[in-house]
Structures are given as structure tokens and as C-alpha cells.
Amino acid sequence: MLPRLTDNHVVRHKISKMKVKCATQVFSQRVSAVMNFLASKNIIESNAFDTAKLFLFFDQLFNSLNGSLS
Image 1 (tube, rainbow, N blue to C red):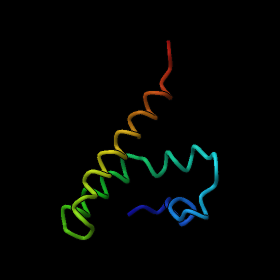
Image 2: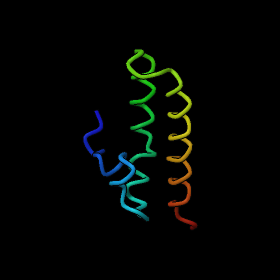
Image 3: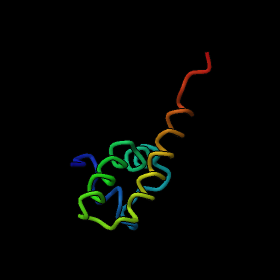
């Protein structure tokens, strides 16, 4: 479901410091959607809905900061 995510994205001691690309891949609309789906099917805990909302917020924030100023 999330082939781009690896241990380097989610395991604390493997996360590369100061890598924005890793953060944008984790805090993405795709991860948010997958978390919502898995929580709705009771595959993961229902409090994942809140985490999914937070991930979507960060995705939208990153997108707004990357927009052009023209």
C-alpha cells in the first residue's frame, strides 16, 4: 500500500536527520488515506483517524509552502 515508505522513514534510529523529503513522504495525503482506510476496517486502532488528520494537515502545509508566489 505504501511502497515508498521503508524502515528509514519510521524507525527512530534509522531516520536521516534534516531530510525534508522523508518528512514529506511520511506526512502525505497517501499515508493519511491509507491510515483512514485501515482504521475504518479495524486493522489498526481507531485513534489512527486523528493521526491521519494530522498527516493530511502537514501535507497541505508542505504543499502551501511549496507554491509559487507569482
